[in-house]
Image (cartoon, rainbow, N blue to C red; front, side, top):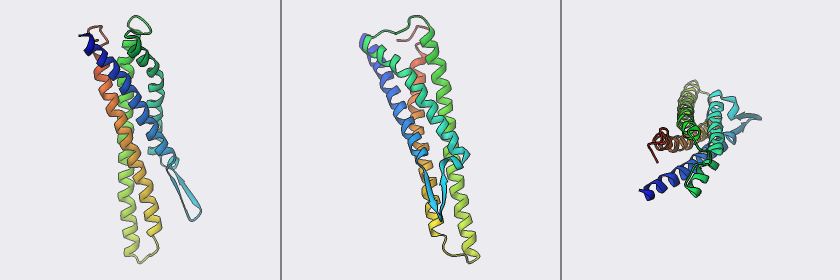
Length: 179
């Protein structure tokens, strides 16, 4: 029994590290997403949906940074840093709130990126029908910009998946019946 308890505690610490890594990577991908076209610079912050993706990723990073020392301490010492029900209750509610926040960030990121990608394709096609040429660079740079948004959302999805697993593991501990 003690071995399975140790495996679960170590798994929680590893999952918190993976969540932190995925959220930090998603934030880095979205913040560095920009391009220049004819002197005009397009940044991630020009699209409100990408700002929300950044907010979700930053929330995941912040929460993971708060939780990580407690998880590592529990993995090393095999006991909680703070006795009582505060930490199990904080884990229970905090993990769920952050998981839903990350999930909504994933949805917004995919939705905005895919819809704008379709819109730009249709816009370029419409201009080509009208006989306007020279839109290749416009289309290429916009498509690359939106694909990076999709990639950032995919990485954030990995952060959500690890947080979702954490919600299951930490739920068992809330009433003291778990590990």
